[in-house]
Amino acid sequence: MRSEFQAAIAQLIAEKGLPREVVMETVANALLAAYRKSFGGGENVRIEVDKNGEVHVWASKRVVAQVTDPNEEISLAEAQRLIPNAALGQLVDVDSSFIFARIPTQTAKQVILQRIREAEHEHLYDQIKNWVGEIRLGTLTRKDANRGWVIDFDLDKVDKVEGLMPVSEEVPTERYRPGQRIRVYIYDVRKVQGRLLQILASRTHRDLVRRLFEAEVPEIYEGTVEIMAIAREQGSRTKVAVHSRQEGLDPIGACVGVRGSRINNIVRELNDEKIDIILWDKDPATFVANSLSPVKPLKVELRESDHTAIVTVPERQLSLAIGKDGQNARLAAKLTGWRVDVVKPAEGEVYEEPVEDEAVTTRRQRSRSRSQK
Image (cartoon, rainbow, N blue to C red; front, side, top):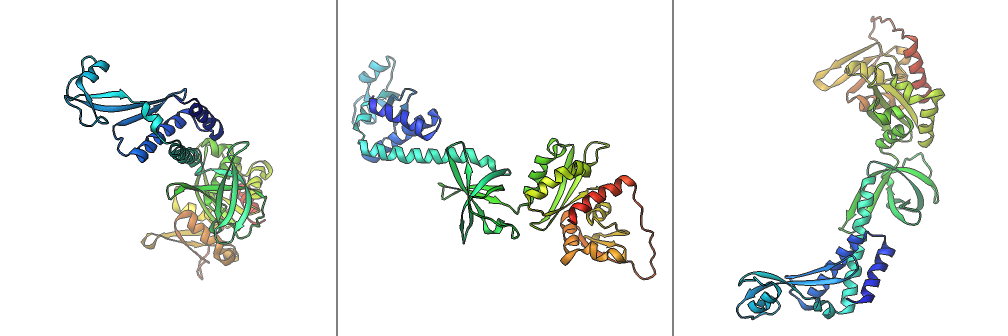
């Protein structure tokens, strides 16, 4: 049909970066909408745009003995010229490409541009929705006092997309500045009012820690070491419970790396947030005991009635077990799912402090050195 129309479609494909099929379908739907807007009706009209940009218009008409509405009906004689065995009452697709020429150019242009914008938005959403649950590198551009930091993410070498790190997702101890490159965890990609795309990012999310471990520790990425639980007080301290699925593999050693190489990379990314790597155990009492690292409890009593773990520790380690402002015990509770009450031995109670084997002691020292820095 119109050569300039075909050129316009080719330009749209080149400029918008949309798949050809998407553009063709979008333009066809837009032309149909423009026709209905200009002339009303058109429920029986179908418009197709082929791969060459040619527009084909078809009208589905019922075969009747006497035509009263030429937009909806076709005579038997006319129908049989198209389909020799056409019969009364049958629906026949009639080439009505002349309709295309009747659509006002300005109306068609407006509707096509609107539909293309909608298609762009949908295509962008399809690209970005899979970012949820990933760490992405972005650039801080500006601070909105009420909403948070606006972040630019690269889509490709040319295009960027804007995201937001809400105030609630900022780490209080971190300092941000425009132009700063930053790794963030994408926790949501949503449409607002059906059109606006909103990408929400976080520096506080505990799964940011999980993804960093997956990136730094091959055993976690491959699944031979599993992260069982994470408890985090962002900017201050995190406890990560790990478990080996491979006999003989030390999960804490795998996470720490040679001379602390792996864990140090994670700590640097989190701006020196303290990290305790805890050995997970299927026995709740043992897990609770491990969770209070670097302290070695004397006894753990589980009270099922209120899901409380009463942990007895050496008196000289009581404050260490509880932690500053109760942080160590609080994180242990979050990690294990048990309420943790830390107590010293009752008067008259005598415990022999357990002696760990060299391998376990070395492992705990590695964990302790990271948490006490």
